[in-house]
Each structure stands twice: as structure tokens, then as C-alpha cells.
Length: 81
Image (cartoon, rainbow, N blue to C red):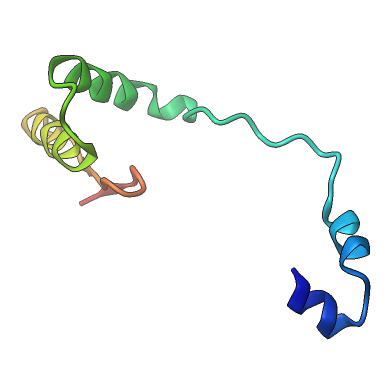
């Protein structure tokens, strides 16, 4: 923040105060359309607690493909073809 304050020629405290918002942050929970996906992920994690996100995604994708559904991306949980 200091380089920005220096470039603008304003006090850092003033800039920090302007950046504050009273607006509450959105809740951190998955969207409702991902509830079914979350249930699949939790099932895998319950069975294999030591699995990381990549291996869990591979198992979920294996199940999705066998059900004839689209796979999901391990990074964004976006559907991929």
C-alpha cells in the first residue's frame, strides 16, 4: 500500500481508511447447484480421509463419467467436457 500512497501523494493511513468498507462479505459456502457435488466429495473424503484434492477429484470424475455426466475441474469445480 505504501507505493500506491507515495504515487498518489496521499497519506497511507488515509488510503487505508478509504479502502475499508462496511459492506459485509458474502458467506463462504458452495452455491446450491453444487450441493450434489459436495455430497459426492464428502463421500470420498469420508472413505479416504488422506486423499488430497487431486485424487479426490479423480475419483469423483470417475463416478461422474460412469453415470454419464460431465467431469468437473479440480481447480474451479467448473464443468468440463
